[in-house]
Image (cartoon, rainbow, N blue to C red; front, top):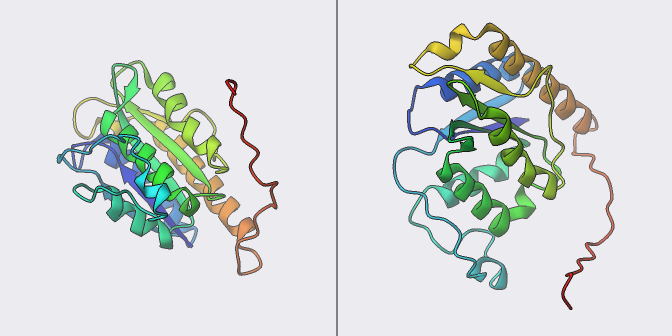
Length: 207
């Protein structure tokens, strides 16, 4: 089993990385393979709602000039997903939101049923609003949201300060232990055991 962790910070070894690393270390202790991917400092385009990915059944975004499709490829071998982001003005990094929206729209089948968790890192406030925003897409994709002893929030501004948030680090470990437990339950028979669901029956309010 493997968990893909997305570092949504432009800082490669910043506080978001520390929070995700704490979770990854705990997952590894539970026998779960991990990989942390950083979105980097290059631009991540937003979805333009062209619909080409679905009309042509590509399984990836029609635009291939950023990290989006490389992460989609990694989802083939991932059994769960953790997305971490710094908090900007009470919101996740805009690049992370663009990335998740494009991944889920163009390759939603690759995340269906897979456990997920969001992690937010902030200086002082706004983390709960950002955390709620990051969890909304998981719930639309039938992804079991992995909880912890508190919201998955870690505090720190200067590089390395997140390590001083002892409760935040414990929250990361608890979340990772919960995710490992859930993955082992899902894969107890060697193959993923997901619930059967009714076919989607969409309804628009304006007909």
